[in-house]
Length: 306
Image (cartoon, rainbow, N blue to C red; front, side, top):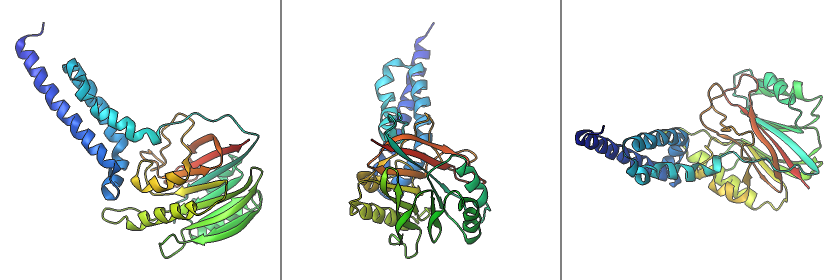
């Protein structure tokens, strides 16, 4: 039997938990603020969502009438996380292009192993980022027989079963090349590929990354190609405000395997910083896979056209 003293204790506990929930909601709302605050909240968002759900359930167990204020953080989380939610695969079109991308982690010696694991998926195009001289050579030795067409710039490279044309390096305001643009003559028709390895983000230092992503979005906005794929290591979580300009130009290939789609760190992924964006396709498959010894999971997408 619930005594008045117990009910008062429950109400006090519920008020504290509601306060925590409202604070979580306010924190998650900060995820729409461009710059370091939005970036930090985007990285923390999955964990904040789990905490919000646990706190909400605990509140409901104490006082059911607190359901509405207690659910504020969960509602904000669901809205904020919507772009990262899994999606249903589209109905396969008449022709398709499959493409895979991985950050192989410089100095890890993962170039050959990653390439071997990736070609086991039989993609049309393999793209690698954070290549050093040794890993680029090792990957090329594995890929060149099945993927005779290639184009590499700086720390990024593309290998394809189909001819590549119009390759050009992109510095995207960084001052040195960590991105490229190339056209693949695929069965789906000529498709422009943008491969990017965005600058790293550290506390107090993310301006270079933000500029690269803004420049990438502007470059793609000026590109009138009907079929475009932009992929690689963006060093930005799915809900990071820095990706909003790019999301206005292209559609992100959301996970179709029902999983989180997280890519880093590979041993226990907690955030997705490797992405595939597209224009002119339907997404028949989008998932992640372990390849080599890199600290990033690879991302794989199969895109179709009618």
